[in-house]
Structure formats: C-alpha cells, structure tokens
Amino acid sequence: MEQENAIRIFEQTQVRTHWDPEKELWFISIIDVIEVLTGTDRPRKYWNDLKSKLKKEGSELSEKIGQLKLQSSDGKFYKTDVADTEQIFRLIQSIPSPKAEPFKLWLAQLASERLDEMQDPEITIDRALEQYLPTKPFWQLWRMLRESFNSTIQGVSVL
Image (cartoon, rainbow, N blue to C red):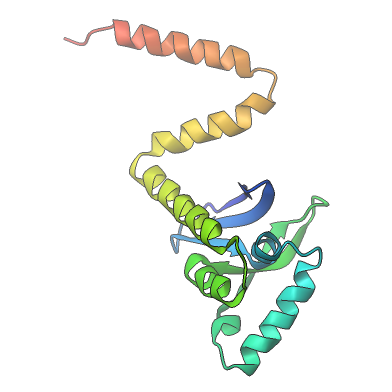
C-alpha cells in the first residue's frame, strides 16, 4: 500500500511524520519530538539517556518503539526511531517541557486533519495543490485553468 512520508512544522521546527494507511496510524520521529520539546542541540543523546532511564524504571515504551527510514536534513534516508501518537503522548509525559501542551494540541490537529481527509478525499487533493504546486512555475496557469473549468461546470445544467 502507499505510504506517506511528510515533514510537518511545529513552531518553525520540522517534525518528520509517516502515515501508514494499512495500520491507519501516524508514526512520528522521536528525535524530532525531543528536539521540539527540549530545544536541545543533541536530541539523539537526550533520547538515548531517556531510553536507558525508562528501561531501568521498567517502562514498556522503549520496547514499542519502531524504526523507519525517514529523510534526514542531508536528503538521505536513515533508520529513525519512531512512535505512533499514543506512544508519543506517553513520551511527552516523560519530558518536562513548557511546550508539551501546545505539542499535544498540534498532534491532535494532525490526527483531525487526517480523519477529515479520509472522509473527503478532495481535501487531500486541495492540500497537495496548496503545498506542492506553488513551488512549481506552472502554478499560475494551473490555477487559472482550474478556476475556468469550475466556472464552466457551474454554468452547465444537467437535465
């Protein structure tokens, strides 16, 4: 099945995400979440220390972590620790941060957007057009043709 890798933005920080349509779950890069919540310039070190601490405390969170190949800042794909939204919420509880609540709201919005897209696929198409096409030179032409087509369709009545 088709899988969607995307970079989402939370307070001007990139968060790598992956939608698995088979499981109908978002998977989110743990390193990115830690970077957002802590502001540290060494999120991998923070995650390794936190993972060790959670294992010592008997938490099952670290056992439920998976790895997916996500694109890095250098453009290459590397295996990255990821967790679904339920596990991310548990992880957030382990990290003292004033950004925890805003990040939880951001996650809820992410899930809500996906549910809306599943109900109405046109929302997905519109979102793709808004995010992808403006970066392309033919965007103005495409938009003009689409608006022209829509106005033509609206003027035609079906008997």
